[in-house]
Image 1 (cartoon, rainbow, N blue to C red):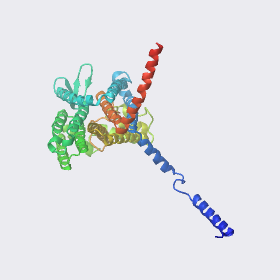
Image 2 (image 1 turned 135 degrees about the vertical axis):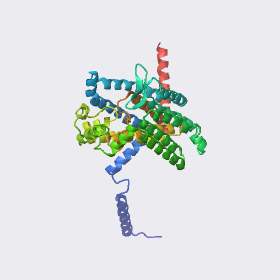
Image 3 (image 1 turned 180 degrees about the horizontal axis):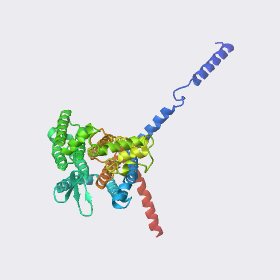
Image 4 (image 1 turned 30 degrees about the vertical axis):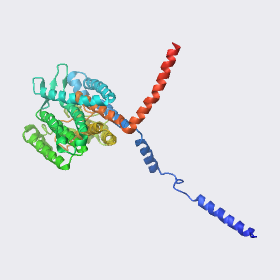
Length: 438
């Protein structure tokens, strides 16, 4: 029979108790309080993982840009509108009307079925080509040195703005149909490259080099997203550079703009007038700006301040802080667009989202570079912000396409489908109860 020593057993138990207490009190990773940086990162990750985050990012950033643009159009154009039309609200009322039209069109595109949108791209390219050709007829007229407008009697339109969107939707459909054949150059480039080239050449012969560069960037950017070999992209890049050089060499106006860009002190009352006025406006804004409506350059120093150079007025009135807010909003919009393109499981929506995003980012970059004297004057408006009916409506329609692609991300599509299924029984119950009571 074994004997048990009580003292030893007690000491062993006490030791075990102390060991368990020590081990239990030792902090683990789960016991350590999260740092503010880690908490912020986890919260941001949780927000970005939500199914409709891309949709809300596009809608939120675009809505703020449009609202800011409407406000700045009023501020930048009030003086010239009163002097020309005796109505300080002339331009902003027209911009608001264009905004309503564009929002209605965008909502229609968001709800439009997939197959209808793809068919619409073919009609859009045909219509855009016809309208671009009409600019060379008696209906076309010149504005700002470019013959890129059509007079319809009751209003005028700029077909090249709508040609960008038509080229994106049609190109996305063509490339999506050939998705499994795009490793062959023949299927990759035909008919996408010739049709896009015709649209770009029609714009080039109008004299609108800035819009042609944007359209060329869209074309090359979509080909890059598709996975075009670098040797093909390099060839297209060399052709594009040669085309831009030819545009400058063959145009005395562009050569004067280039000379003025290279020498800011030359032709101060001519080619350098607008560029220098824009820089003066931005420089006088400082950190916080002169206050909304406090711009001095809009009193005649900055020509057409509410259009291509509206960012200069933003810098003058809202300062560096307001300018950085605008840049941040465009970065959010660009991030959301690329996120939609990368998450889409449908080739058409992937290419369409990429095309719209490239359009907005390239055009915004060119406009900002021109205002900051990093590029010669190109006559390209700031998307969603600058004054212009054709540009604003086309931008809003493109946003409608981008929002439609966001709603069809795999997770978003599943969530919206579940909401629809859960809503139908409720609606049926309500209808049934009403019928019984009747």
